Length: 332
Image (cartoon, one colour):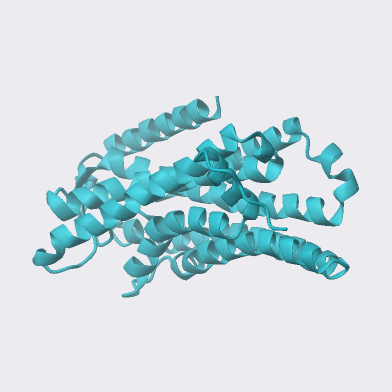
């Protein structure tokens, strides 16, 4: 089980971090952190709590509905929708790793998080985020094969191949996150413990370290920058071939259907990549908009994905109607 392997590796990381803390002795006195959260007037605490609670509920229910629809409807048992299930699961878990703690801060003023809890939150976020980055690339490759090599698609994208590719994205996310998390929490934290952010993330934690973080900032820039750029270039390359193939389709309806399917994926990719680029390509800085941008890709993007995929995908809309027990009326 891949998730149990990831959890075991995380436990080893926590044990290593704890041993490093004990070796430093009194140099490190931080046992917990305070998540300052989003800056807002006290009277807005309840309205913000209700707003983000509604968004979180819609995110979990919307993505859960996509997973249920794909699992139940046999017409959607194809690689594209199998990968969409993984994307919905990632969106649900990313939101669940961040939003509940944020909600507690709005309503209960519960902003404290233990050192180990901070390690787990940072690991979980980057594990899920990196897996999603790989998955977007995989989904672009799937569309490339389906549109550019339709005669070979069924023989290439078999069920076992899809399973191996999906497992590879989760494994890649695990290794990436272990690398980043171990580098961050090997730094000494011996002074201020107020995280000027609403969750434990790399830029915010670097600002609290009592050591020179130049190497960490460089590693973060190179690692995340290279990873994001490579995946983004592969996605654009896939869609370059896809657009060329679509333009060769003689049927106007065929071109429209192909563009509609690909437009949903491209929209999601840009919504995901632009905010992440803004945050992680300058990990040592503290821009006023960082918090707003982070809210967008941790809270809003997981909500937008099911909306984009259902509104722009005729097969998914038809499957939702069938799931609701209503007859799908086909246009004449």
